[in-house]
Image (tube, rainbow, N blue to C red):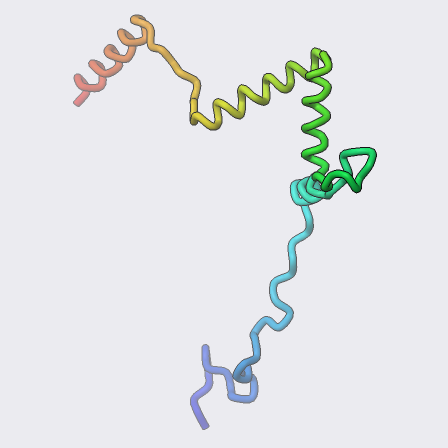
Length: 121
């Protein structure tokens, strides 16, 4: 009889070849808000009164079109939101981060801290 003990269970208790130690597997995680939201805005809808004349678009695309159409018709709040979104998208596309300009007072403060640190060594 082969040795048994810690890490070596008897043959009769070992998993058979090809049999998983976790047959049901890891349970699927519950759905969260983000998943539900993205699924909802990705559903297709007909954007026109005559759905046969144009392909369906997603709810997100329809919402964006409605916002832009409202802005184009003169809605001030919609216009402000569209401009805000465009600015944000352009800044993200350029990889632009807020630019900081150091004043002379900032430079003096940085140099003073540097001098103190160098003296401490």
